[in-house]
Length: 305
Image 1 (cartoon, rainbow, N blue to C red):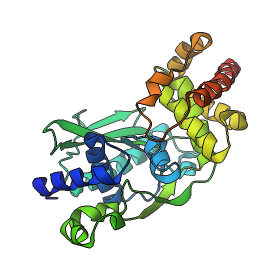
Image 2: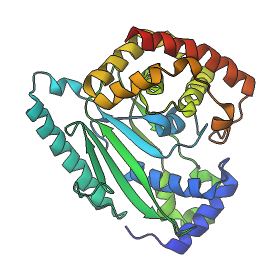
Image 3: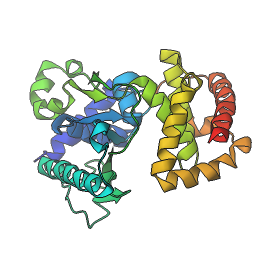
Image 4: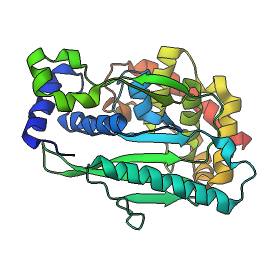
């Protein structure tokens, strides 16, 4: 894929006036996210995580820079041996990696190079790193695409339209013609995504299974609550089920839970940590009230395991 660097630079500069995101490095990163979402075939996978929230549910409330997916047909693993599962995952990892390489963004599908591909848990988890060089700063960066092949999906995924950072109609007719090949990546696309309830349960689980608790998970849950009026406690059974699935299948999550459980009483979610991440305005008192209720739920949940 050949992209005129000077034209891309002009294009990215022109977007700044059409969006609430002012950091140009984020506008540029979103351009590459848009290419990947536009060009890749995600048949058989469900989109999830922070970028899914931003593009499908919460209209860019904050910026997220990774693409996270789960393999949908979990029944495929039923009755299969560990070796059979590993082999099937390998085939799917290869197919997706080869597809990614063909896009032409400079990604090399080389499983021996951890700068390109990282495998985990006997091929049940793969991370692809798609590199790009900023036309604005000249610095190297990358987009991370992670696929989880072994997951407990409790709510049926649904096909939903993804929102772009910009609308093509925001550009003049003249600019639409001039930037046509770049605007193509921002055209509407519908893909299979996680149910919002599934995202709530996974976000609550993440607060207990990350190496370090991240306040961004709490702010995601707050914005979900503000729009959909649902909280993690509404799905305590499902969250517990997903938590058990994680610690039974991934040793690192079990170890992280043990570490986090011992620190929960002293845990303080910091407003200052999240304010810089969020694009849409929100009140500190709303955040404080939400996490005050969230913390006891996490303590109770961790104690059940």
